[in-house]
Every structure is written in C-alpha cells, then in structure tokens.
Length: 459
Ligand code: TYD
Ligand code: MG
Image (tube, rainbow, N blue to C red):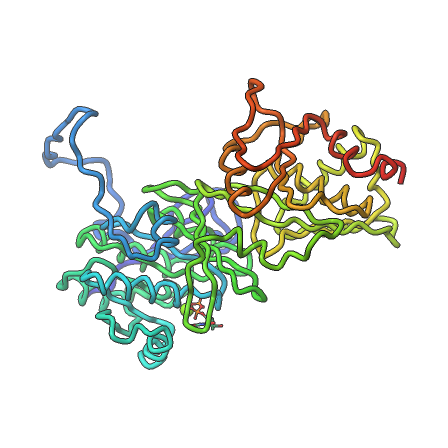
C-alpha cells in the first residue's frame, strides 16, 4: 500500500503547511503545527464537475423512532449515558490513571454481553492475562466478551468490520496507532487519526464505541481537547484517591442530559453501584459539631445530600489562607464578602478551610447558604441545629434567593431522617410542601447569622 502523504495543520488557525515548522506562518503561533494524514483525494478544490445526488427533504414532524438503546443493566452507568448506549455512537470515558476506567468498562461489557449483545474489549494497555485476571476477580470470567490485545487500528478495523457487534471498548485510545502516521502513539495526531477511523467504523457498523482516554496533567483528554469534539458523549470518571467513591459525570452528551452523575464505590470485587448516594456521603458525619452543615443539593435529576465542613482560624500570616476542596473558591470569596459587608461578620484576618465531604464536587449556587451556615457555625463555635439541611442562593445584597426543585430537596431530606431545613422563601410566596420537614425561611443572610449567636458578629 502506498504511504499516504502527511500534512501539518495549525491547531490555532487551521492553516495547512506541507512541512513541520515551530511557528505557524499564517497566524504566528508557536508549536501549533500537528501532523495529520492527508485526506485520500487531498483537500477538495471547489466542487468541480460531477453531478451530486438529490437530497430527500422531509417535514420536521415525522415518525422517526427514538434511537433504540442498549441498556447494560448497570443503572448508574445507563443513566449517565442518557438511558443506555445508542448504537453507532462514540463515547469517551476520561479520567486519571488508576481511577477505575478499565474496571468499569469491563463490567459494562460483561453485563451487556450476558444480555446476548455482542461485546468486544480491546486492550492496548494490558496483556490478555491481566484482563483475564481482572475478569476473574470481578466474577465475570464466564461472560461471553470477545477479548483481544491490539494497538494497530488497521488490524482492529479489519477484525471488527466483519463481525456483528453491539459494543466495542477500546482501552485506551492513547495506545492506538494508525500506520500512515510517523508520530508515536499517544500524540495528538495519532489519537485523533485513530479515533477518527474507529468512530467512522462504529457509525458504519452501528455499534456503540467506548473509548478510554487518560487525562493529561493539565486535565485535558489527550492534548487540546481533540477528542471531545469528535465523539457524541464525553464522560469523566472521577474520585479522590483516598476515597472509595467514584463519580461518573457526563460533560457532553448528544443523546441525553449533561448534568447527571453516577455514583460507584470501588470494592474488592469491582465497582458497586451506589443507588442512595446521600446515605453514603453522610455516612461519616460525626454528630453535631460546629462548622458542619448538610447541603440538600441536586445532581441532575437526583437530589443528593452532602456535608459541607468549614474551619475558621485566626491567621498567622498577613494574607490569610483560603483552601477549598469540592467547591468554587471565587464563590467562597463572594459569600465571605457578603457576610462581611451585609452582616458585619468579618472573616478578613482568618484562615478559612472549606471541604465538601466524600470527594464530591459541587457547582450549584444553591450551596451558598449551606457554605455560609458552615462558616458562621465554625466562627461562632455553635453547631447547626440537629437534623437540619440548608440550601439557597445568596445575592450580593445579602438576600437569599429561591432555587430550583425545592420540593425534591426537602423530600430527600425527609427520606433520610432530617426534620428541619433552612431554605429561601418561595417565589410567589407559596408554602413549601415539605412533608415532615419543618422549614425555616431565610430571606436575608442576616437572619441566618442571627440564628447562631448575635455576638458572633462582633468577633
Ligand atoms: P483500573 O480499572 O485499572 O483503572 P484505570 O483503567 O482507570 O487506570 O483500576 C485500578 C484500580 O482499581 C487499582 O488501583 C485497583 C483497584 N481495584 C479494586 O479496588 N477492586 C477491583 O475489583 C479492581 C478490579 C480494581
Ligand atoms: Mg486501565
């Protein structure tokens, strides 16, 4: 086979150069030229002659059946995918090395294979024996998954094109290479070319393609997010090393919502689903101590209670420390500024440590009030009243605003044995349907501060 010509494409401006150079001639950026396999017939030069095929236009309304989905039976995984795997779609599963991507995908493949679907697992990282050992450890050795160890995309395409499959796992895309490029596996051009070939095959053969991608130091999947644009769905598998919780998060999904998360627990026998994450995240809570507040949050469609811990200490340094785990540091700065300006509670000369227990990361503004409660509680050395959840968004004037899904949050709190809530007043003044949970409405942050100890304000 003749060797295809390579070309070099600037990742910043898209200019094409025949040779590599350190600087792009066109836009002047440095180190942006990346080798690419030239398209078969070279770049199109206008449309030329040749008649095109006529398009069939149809009405917007119609009876297209929704994509039939392949349900693996691992509910936490299926939900994050938007309700199962869509045939012909490509899904990128990113995460730090060692977080459990291979384990998760082997479990998905095995579960799906047991339902009668054709599943292949291609490992470029581990030898057959290693994957078999893991399968045995997971109790999945007898599942009819087709296993192979390979890294050449040409071999993989040749083998998969002939077979009838519903799911193919590529572990990992960074180990795959196409032989028309000179660069080493794992480089941007190789990763992109390999993914392109495999995605094209998945579309043609109609199998769901799961690509494992290791996250680089900068937190990006294989360089400048090259893969995220090419696939239909991007899932991140995250977790703290020291914790056994793992969270699967959709950051892009053409076939479903992107705010869903799946929660797993890494056990001796693989990843176990956690169907009641609130109980898990609150499991290690220690009675009523100052500086701890339970936030009633939402992750996608699911309510989730998490503990927020704060520690406030006089700072030995001129510039106090602000250390935040699991929340946005800028948001903390805003909450402390509002506490200072609107409630006269000065945190300026103190170190603040804020931690979302269990390794979860919260992005909701609804956590503002829970963070404020943890901070005020820590400062006044008085615990938040027992069995109380907190939520609400804080505005710059100190007002506490209503948040979405208040009923769902209160219901989850009631289900887990909480009996009280600090919550914002409802829009339109309607009373919350709180069931057994007694709601204390907080319209202004000052009301929350007063609940603790007025003297704390002078501190
Ligand atoms: P792995 O799936 O290999 O991670 P990745 O593919 O993301 O690099 O998971 C590796 C870690 O998971 C390893 O540290 C061991 C642990 N593990 C368990 O705790 N229990 C198990 O049943 C398995 C298979 C792995
Ligand atoms: Mg792996």
